[in-house]
Length: 225
Image (cartoon, rainbow, N blue to C red; front, side):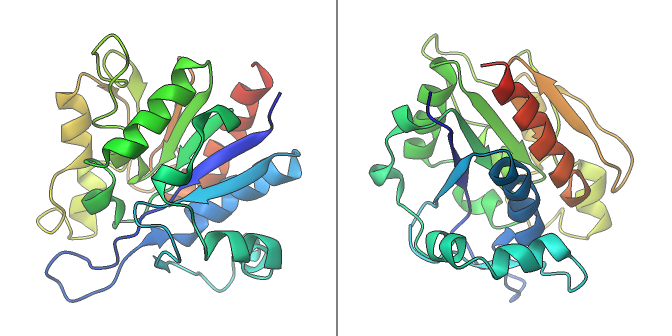
């Protein structure tokens, strides 16, 4: 069996009309990456536009971030992400949508990524996401026409957390509300608390603080395949 997991990162670098930059949140890539790589999985990277995606959130005291940034092999990979058209879904046992506010602009309506995730899921693979990464889940439909998240327990960056960082009027929609609209049974904890939800091979986490735990939960699900 293939031991490859596809990580999806945003190509979007502008934080709405604030004049500030965004992208993928570094720790939401590095912590799940470290868990899976240390367990023997190979990670590939895709972004809506391919190439070198923007990132932010490099907290200086994060040893896992340091490890990732010093890893030449994986730096070469993430600085040269695939485009969706270059991905063969059959190669992967799981897909993981990393967070970062940029995802809110370019994940939801990317039909190619949605089809990749649908194919991985319907071949008994894992679909996972953390923080704003579940923006990539809102429009995934299964072969039966139902939304992937419909009827499942799902977790993501909450409306309260969006308000706390004062970006609830900047993002194009509120992620928690959109997931509920799609039929998700939304679960959440308080601000910045670690929260991971697992339901029918879908693993979701609430915020950057949940990134490591999401990686561990994905690993546990992969072991069941």
